[in-house]
Every structure is written in C-alpha cells, then in structure tokens.
Image (cartoon, rainbow, N blue to C red; front, top):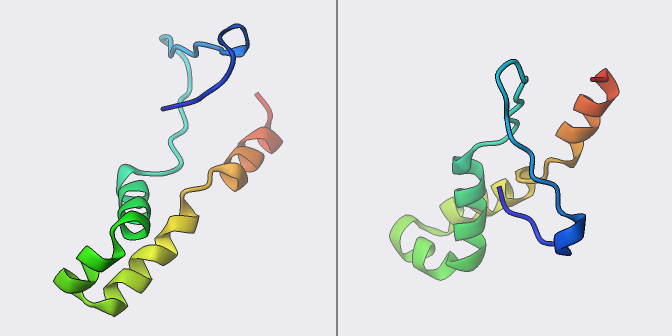
Length: 76
C-alpha cells in the first residue's frame, strides 16, 4: 500500500491477530491498468490494438471507492 500526506496526519495501520483483512483488488488489475496506460505502443506491437483497448478498460477497475463504501455500510 502507498499513500502521501503530512507526517502528523499519517496513520500506520498494522494487522493484528484477530483482525479481519479485506482485499478487494489484485496486483494483476493494477499492473494491467497501469502498464496499458504508460506503455500502450509497446503492448500494441507485442499483442495488438484490441488487447491494449481491453487492458486499458481494466484501468478503471483499480478504484477501491465502491469497495470501501460497501465495507463501510456493513459496519465494524
């Protein structure tokens, strides 16, 4: 996980025994989305224009806003 902010505003979440951890996205989604946004020409040469388009559509699946809202609505 990566975040930016003023040092005094940062929190340091640490998982402890008994904590519930929710993982809502995977590294494959982020890698596909980012690489297709940053290196579309390279990917197009290797895999074709259709592949790049599908990979770029994955970019918008990286957001965790909807996931967080669902988790918050359940409580605790």
